[in-house]
Length: 258
View 1: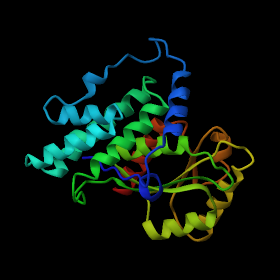
View 2 (view 1 turned 180 degrees about the vertical axis):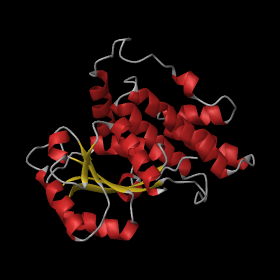
View 3 (view 1 turned 45 degrees about the vertical axis):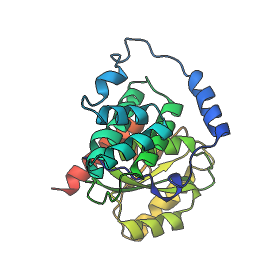
View 4 (view 1 turned 120 degrees about the horizontal axis):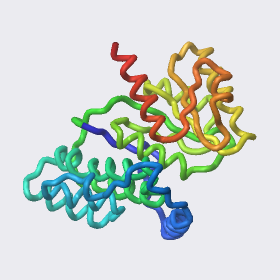
């Protein structure tokens, strides 16, 4: 089973009309990949077969908040267990759009709007404490970096792959990261930087965690980051994209479980 919790910042509000317009405009400018890059998938093939779970998953994949809320309410009112509705319906929709994103068949707008619909649906499911989680991860952008959209995409995909994600926000300093690590005991800290002028903040964070004897990896990515930069500290790792990041996290969890 998968657990989805987009943390304290990302779950507080829906995107406003201007943000959605800008995301859709950005998505329309993305280049369409050639068929040779990865096999083409269809959303229909990735959705569950049985109703009402298929319709619920479709509402999430389509970023339809109203439909997600209404369908979940109907399912719960009909006696469906909220946990089953979440795992077999809502999360399947997020899984589907995440797979399409990994295959370059979905872009920024689809991921963020799907996450919005998912969060809205989860609010109607009741107590979901029984959802299995692989572990908690923290996510933030480097101190001085206010870019947010890429972080939210990563948070959505990581959460859809079974992790509880706590979003610390943008421009987060090393002291705040340390505090959050102590409070939440994460399996990893995720950091993003799109500006070379801010990426040095990750060196400070990595050094602070090491000095405090905290053996939690700092996994970093973004336009300003590469393998060479991440290799400057033993407790830093690089992830090129959300798909690679999930693989790194899964490897960390497997190693911890031995």
